[in-house]
Length: 235
Image (cartoon, rainbow, N blue to C red; front, side):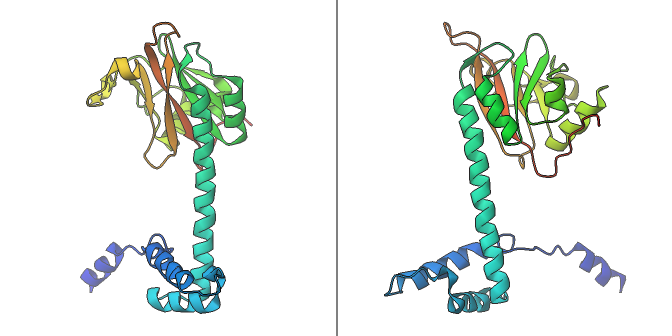
């Protein structure tokens, strides 16, 4: 009896059309109906189509349609978010070292819950954009030799960093933790760089020593804060 209970506990139920792998089936079925429609009407909203889809995937037609349209809305939202990250990258990529970023990039970041991170001599991290402790305090240390930001005195910074998986890398290493990025090239990426969890949407950009020699000072980070992010600001 106990083994059956343990087996049930190990079973993970996946919710949603995308999680269950039904999106390709749905889109293939929608394409088939639209391709065979002599009147060229969009069959996406047809009751008959969703009844057919429901039978194929084992879902109630209404639930399947509702979940699919929610999936499309989320996909559109994510595309918009990524376009904002790219817009900021287009502004910041190749800027000259100054411990700062262009005002237009700051404005876009603040309006879209995004933060922009750049490095500064000797071991500082500068943050701009969305309202949170990272940007409110702006200047943070811990860059020398890299840091996971997990065991630091600044607990507000630590709590925000933990939510993002934010880490500071110095020449591709976090020395105290024995971490190293294989193949890291300081000529290509500079001394400072930053990483976040893979689930966090982000883009990198280059900060140059100066416009004359074009040497890379650091690789900055543009981060879309997730919906469940909790800023550690003083109330």
